[in-house]
Image (tube, rainbow, N blue to C red; front, side, top):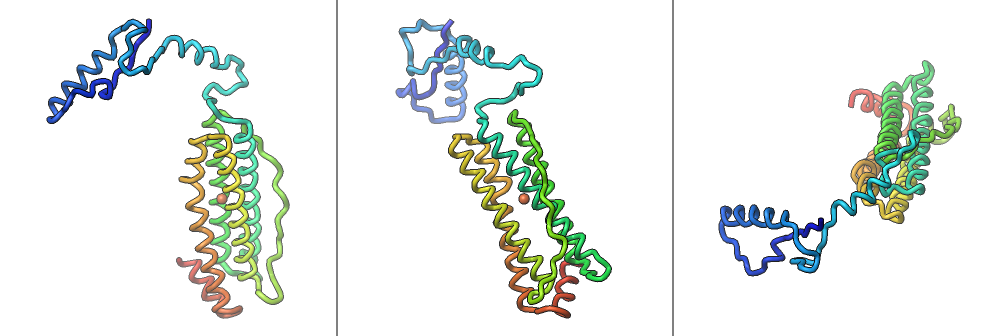
Length: 240
Ligand SMILES: [Fe+2]
């Protein structure tokens, strides 16, 4: 059986004025669209053959238990790139965790910085988890790779530890942004509209905000200088 879809474009002679007229016509068109018509009499030229097309889709549903059932138009390149980005997020999370451990030391005791870097570490881990969930949603397979050992000392003879760590944080955020933009490029190249929109809506905006915030912190730390200025800045991070 062949069905033909009919739209209002198929009835250009209709001029609708009121809601009730439009509602009536909509119902009528819906009924007309359900009529079975001969293949050589199309209204719009748009032929919908549900049962023929479904045969193809049914054929494509995997039956092997280790294969994703939901996967559709999700390329291997996108799957691999998502796994790489998950690894980036975990590495950044680990680096922030090392900063938290440093500023939490009894002989460093900048509790505001410790709190800031701990929250940053948790945020990056959440990013990794979001990407894991997205990978699964699209029917990809999550592969977790190794995490590199981060620095454990953050003091700098000229900048001190607070400014030095914040500059490292900025470079981490900019690197993450570069990687996210690369991930976005791959989604575009693969014509994966959903993944492209997901990265734009869930990651790119937040990344730009993070870069701006940390840049401001660096400017302020340069202004206040080391010692007493850093202590005040730390109080702001602790209570802010
Ligand atoms: Fe992130």
